[in-house]
Length: 218
Image 1 (cartoon, rainbow, N blue to C red):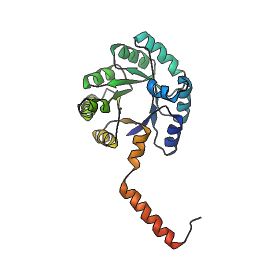
Image 2: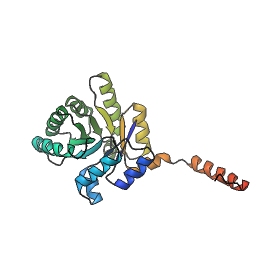
Image 3: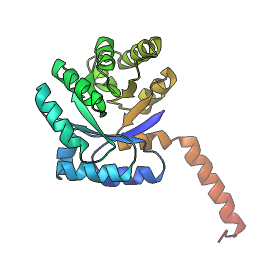
Image 4: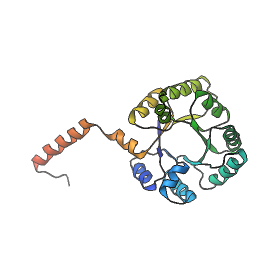
């Protein structure tokens, strides 16, 4: 499973990349706004950190506007994935940009039917939002299972399932067990994956025993 980092904070991305935990990055207008920096500069800097896909989202809502913005975004770096919403206009833009060789991430997916349409439009990635479904008392992970099953039924569909709106490690583990291709995770959730009380306790015991020897490796 590929790990994408869901943030526009360059320092966080660089730190996680050093640990080999970044296969790509997803951003959106809200995340870039939080950074307080110029949008294109942020995307360019992120693209330089990781060779993997970096999703940069359009802000237009009509197909022509999305296509125009997508073409501009692609000039920032070759690993930019143009992010479009799952609307009819978004699918038109997806089809056009994909036919021109662009990577396209279709976002805000909340049903298997939407995911199937995005795949038929040539999406590189489909981004189903599990956490937001959980928020309205709907099983977000059921959506992932349904999309993975549908895509497996049709090998000609090459779209990868990019699990988004991940709130905690259980979302990630369940998605990995289902066979989702990618999960995009906020930095804090990635770091939560590292934590286990027995790891901390074991390390503490090892260090205490080593200290008693009075030795030093260096």
